[in-house]
Every structure is written in C-alpha cells, then in structure tokens.
Length: 179
Ligand SMILES: Cc1cc2nc3c(=O)[nH]c(=O)nc-3n(C[C@H](O)[C@H](O)[C@H](O)COP(=O)(O)O)c2cc1C
Image 1 (cartoon, rainbow, N blue to C red):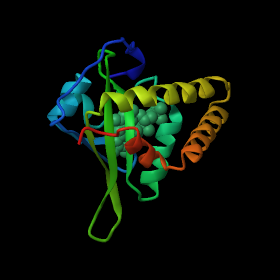
Image 2: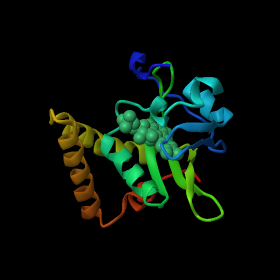
Image 3: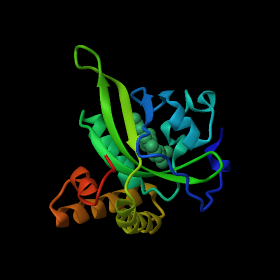
C-alpha cells in the first residue's frame, strides 16, 4: 500500500474511550503486531499493516519535529506520551494520545517498541492544533528538509521552555487523555 496515493479528507474517525489501539514494532519502527482497533481505525487489514513502517498511518499535518522527539526519546530508552493525528487508508483522520515505550529482553536489550493509544479529550486536541500548525509552517519555510526539521525542533524546544515543561508534561497539562 503506497502512502503517497492517499489524499487526506477532512473527515474524522473516532473511537471509544475504553478502547486501546495497540501496535508493536521492531527497532526500526516496522510494525510486527497491530490489534483489531488499530486496523479498524487505519481502515486496513492486518496483512496491509504488518511488515510496513509505522509511517503507514502518518498524516501530512503532523510536524516532523514531533516524530524527532518521539524517536529521540525511545531511542535513548525513555518512554514518551504524544498527541498524534493519524490518517486512515481512505484519508480520514483520527487523533490519539500515544504512550510509546521500548520493549526489552531479560538483559535489558531493546527488542523493539510498543505503543498504546487512547482517545484524547477534545480540549487537548484543540490546544495542540495551533502549535502543530506553527511547527508545520516553520518546516515549510525551508527548502532544505534538514534545516526545516532543525528550525521546527528548535521552535518546539523554545515553546516548551517557555512553559517550563517537557513535551510529555505539556501533553498531560493540556488535558492529555480521557484516562
Ligand atoms: C511504537 C511506535 C509507534 C508509532 N506510532 C506512530 C503513529 O501512531 N503515527 C505516526 O504517524 N507515526 C508513528 N510512529 C513514528 C513513525 O515511525 C515515523 O517516525 C513517523 O510516522 C514519521 O514518518 P516519516 O519520518 O516517514 O515522516 C511510531 C513509531 C513507533 C516506534
């Protein structure tokens, strides 16, 4: 399934507060397992999802800086909470609050990653949208992709510094989750 062919549509998919979207990946972010709620929201079959990079559900509205933060955290062994707008196979969007953690073997070696996602509350989504739009706009200002990511990441850091919170704390501060 090629991500490039999907055109985003302005239609939201929602899920119940007691449902959890689960996926497990290898160390590169390739999906090894996705539960039925994941597949329902992604509008894909298990066979479309397993073996694909996690960016298969990436929404173009998401700033790259947020994924850099995610990978910086889990790559150095730390868990992260993130508010993410995802895209289904028909281009619809769905917001999640994700808890992403490294999975380790008995000796502590990272075998891959695990993400549990719940439905965020509406207020947290409304509060994060302008920040993500600002980060996207910063990324779009630069013709050089790397320079765009660096500038957007620096902007995210300065915004967080102003609040005195880490990204996770900020996510919980804006409401985080229904849980
Ligand atoms: C366990 C795990 C869960 C992830 N969940 C998502 C997700 O829900 N949506 C998403 O767009 N990216 C998710 N990612 C990040 C993707 O691997 C990727 O970095 C992101 O989609 C940006 O893709 P791009 O670098 O091709 O732009 C996840 C990564 C891991 C390891």
